Image (cartoon, rainbow, N blue to C red; front, side, top):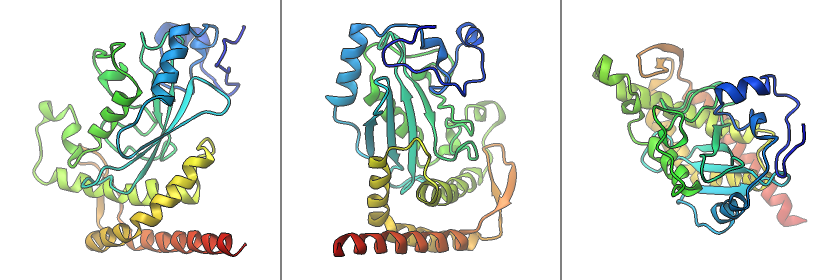
Length: 277
């Protein structure tokens, strides 16, 4: 099969191309259905406009892939005043060969299939938004762009992500669940989207974004400490891990604090060594 400009067939893809072509996929890493399609001229122009000629929402950092024109790496920092504040959320974006007629495919890479950070941000990486055609009927139009996608993702990372759950209209809201779910999100943000992103960064995360994460970590360090002081009373309590009230595992903010202090010392020492060289 001939590979179109800007596309690479991933040898790790285990899903048959015929199945993907028939049923579709949301995953930018499983885009073999796009491999044989040539990039249209309007697609090349729009990708350039979206990626290189656009100012992005505050808290969003965009890095084009060094080898694939249709791939973009995005770092979104958790919005201030939400349980995501201070977190580093890495997304992989892949533009289709007929963009902007069709939306990109987007995947959250932070957590590496271990944490569901939001009713709209699945453990397997799926970003569930009507704008992307991954929730209900697609609301995508060619007037949308990478900027509006990032704004929409920031929009679901709000103060009370519990209320993003669509099943609440059927099951009803439970008193106290919103706060308990936000505590879980805050904990996993600190544990996974801060400590985990620095200690074991995703192998696909570009070096420029790794450096940005370390820079922002130092800026937010006092916030991290204050947040742990605020939440330390939760240690050893069971976590409500989803919007249905299911509980699993216990909080360990004390352990997270130790990791944060170690990371701070490591970055500080590295900075001192650079200055003395």
